Length: 151
Image (cartoon, rainbow, N blue to C red; front, side):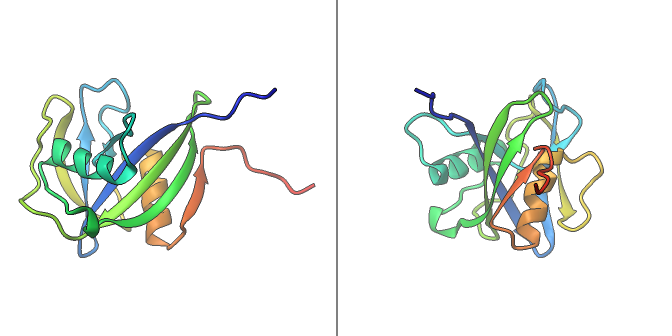
């Protein structure tokens, strides 16, 4: 019997002010340090994706989000260059409480607001793919998988 497919679930939060979104510059994490990403993290056992989004936004950038203010943005089925699949669930909101701060300075060098349609060149490709799908209204997409060729 075939084993069921299992995948790591990442949850990303797009904090949006007009056309700008908040990005975190990774540092000291061991993964893509020196690259920008969204406030994000792994889904924990027993946690919903909505609760994870609220938790990660609070832990990483110090904002409080009412779960009702989160909108589904997109879902990305990502394959890392090392061949590890992930499922990225992206939420967006333009409403939160308190001003964003770098709440994890050991993992983040700085926060920056960047235009959603002109991300820094050092934005994590997986993150950039999710933002682009969101911007263009695509509900589900893939990133990093080999192109499928019609037979």
